Figure 1 (cartoon, chains in turn red, yellow):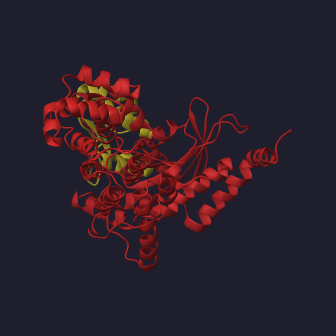
Figure 2: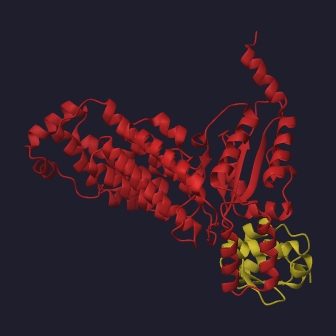
Figure 3: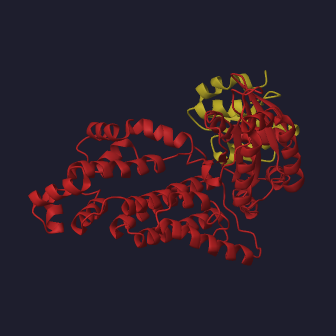
Length: 425
Length: 77
């Protein structure tokens, strides 16, 4: 006999049409956001769309690669956020194909994260001397795209999941498109609006997040993430919202790094991570990729703090040794250099390291290099050979073999997996 | 060459991506859209929605092989 919970869930699933229709109406009346329902039976069929300019926006979805991206996310069953080259953002989620209504895809969007994206696009079109006719044709379509705060749109993605499954998730459980083969929109200016209420909330939220990082509270970080930094970027460069989001991300990385240090993460490790994530933020071209990166960065710092706080107590020399290794991954790390740096003999250092860390120093170095390689594979365009050279592996083959031993997949397969689905490293 | 009616824009642009050289669409107002450029693709998609603009524009290939590959999208002479 079904439990009460299963009965409720089954009724919920059977009632999908009514719920999605209501959700569609709510989105249209409250935000003017379009909803799209696709079927997939070997090929994509658009069943229904409520968006204005739906024909042209459907073409945009196709030519931006967004439709291909979301089509490739059928096995995720989480809200997947993706962007296009004009700065439009969408979110889509597939229904469970096992259910009675089959394989359906619901997409919400597009929305823009700032009115001045449009203004700046207009400026870009004018500066490239396009005629008024085609300039206005494009701007008319985009002018009807609703402008939302990123957090509001992310909340709607969370609601979409609840509507489709009856399950509650948080923004941290959503998938955000990483850097894809998407061109970048011409940036615009931020809205001029009062932010006093936001700033108060942001301060409180920032304090909560930083405390979670400091305490190695991974669950807390997941709970709070998405409620702070993307809410409203710094407004230091009002001509360019993407730049503002990057700057905000960089400040956020620095704050997380400081909190992690206060939580016990060795300063060298924190600084190295800070550098890696800041470089990745600089290289980002689309808003959803920044969200994705923010999540990875936050969890990375917090998990490291958690490990330190929960793990075996390490002696200071071994902590220094680990920090030295992490700060010098791009150099030729030699035992005698490390031992000299720590002030131990090579023999004593290796023995003490193995006793405290449960692995040999060489193995630890390899694992740290693989961790660095994972970030480069997921967040940069560097080739496998280049990464292998950068991390001072003797050959690409050796690098691939080490990577596969640690991660269970080749570097190329890791990159394919973590750039295709928005990355969940 | 003029484009035929009812061209599927996304399909045409996918084909253009495979072309070796640049493929340009020229509007009667003198706009020249390089269909391999990101922004131009969106402008082209908007133009294709406006029949009069599309009918009067021309698609030009710099490479003969590319022109052959796109033949299916040209209006018959």
